[in-house]
Length: 410
Ligand SMILES: Cc1ncc(COP(=O)(O)O)c(C=O)c1O
Image 1 (cartoon, rainbow, N blue to C red):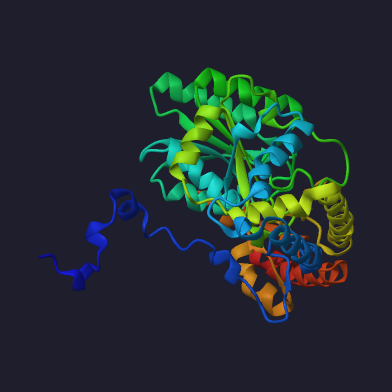
Image 2: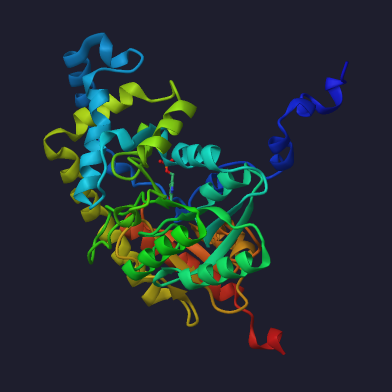
C-alpha cells in the first residue's frame, strides 16, 4: 500500500502532470484588482456590450422551434447549422473551407488545448511570439514542452528571427518546432498586426521546416481602421495552418463557444478527442441569435463601442505619460502595449499603481522567460472612456514616482 497521506494521489498523476504541476494556477491574473482601481488589466468586453435581451429571446425562440431537441444530446437543427454558419463567415474572409473542417469547442482556450493534445509530446518545441497571450503559455506549459519566444515589433512577429533560429537549429541537429502559435491580428498583448508579407514568409517557413502554424484570431473582426491582411489560413494550400477562433469577443465569453478550422483529417481527430463535449444548446442559441444578419450588426456596434475607448486611451497616453513612455497604436482589438521609461519595473510598480487607482498587467506575464519588466498590457475594452482617462492619470502618477531620480543614478 502506498501512503496517500504524504502525497495524496500525486504518485498516480501522469508523468506530464508531475513534471508541470508546480507551474502556477491558470487565471491568476484575474485577481489583480483594487476596489476603486480602474481595471485596465482585464481583457474582458465591457458589460454593456453583452446582448442580454437578444440572447434571452433567441433562447426562447430556439426552445419554441425545437422543443426538447434543443436541450437533448447533440441538439437540434440549429445546433447542426452552426459549423456551416462559421464556415460561410470564414469563406467571406477568404478561407476556402467547408463545415466538415470546423470543430466546435468550449471557447478558444479549449480549441488551443485540443491542438496541443493532438500534436504535442513532452520535449517538443513550441515557438511563440514574445510577448504572447498568457493563457496560451499556461496551456503549452501543461505539455512539458520547450517554449521559445521571438520578438514582436510594430509589424508583428519578427519572422526573420524565426527563420534564423530554424536554420540554426536545423544545422545543429536540434529540435525543430512542432507548432508555432501566433495571434496575427490585434495581437494580445501588443495590439499589432502581422503584415501580409510576413504572413506569407511564415507559411513558407512552416512548409520548409515542417511545423504547424496555430493561428489564433479572436480580435480580427473588431477592426476600426485600415483593411485586414488575408488570414494565414487563407494562404494555406498545404493544410498546415490550424485556425482557432471564438465567439467570446463578438458575442460574449460566457457562451464559451469557439472552433478550429483545419483539414478534414485533422478535424476528425479533434472530433474524436473531444467526442461528446460539444456545447449543443449554446450552438443552437448562437445560430438562432446570428440569424438575419444580427451577428454582423452586433459586430458593427461593438466596433463603434470599442473605437472611442481606443481613441481615449491613445489620447490620454499622449497627454499624460512622462517622456520616455512608448505605446503601440492598434487599428482594432482590445490592447495597447505600453513601454515605460528606463528603470521603471511594471511588476514592482503595480501595488502603488493600484493604490493610485489603476490596474494593468505587467509585461512579464506574457513571456515564457524573464523578459517584459519594462512593459505593461493596458486594455481599453472593459471600462468607459472617462474611466480610461482617470486610469491613465493614475498610471502616469505611478510611473513618475517609480522613475529613478538623477541622484539615484549617480
Ligand atoms: C489571443 C487569445 N486567444 C484566446 C483567448 C481565449 O478565448 P476564449 O474565451 O474563447 O477561451 C483569448 C482571450 O482573452 C485571447 O486573447
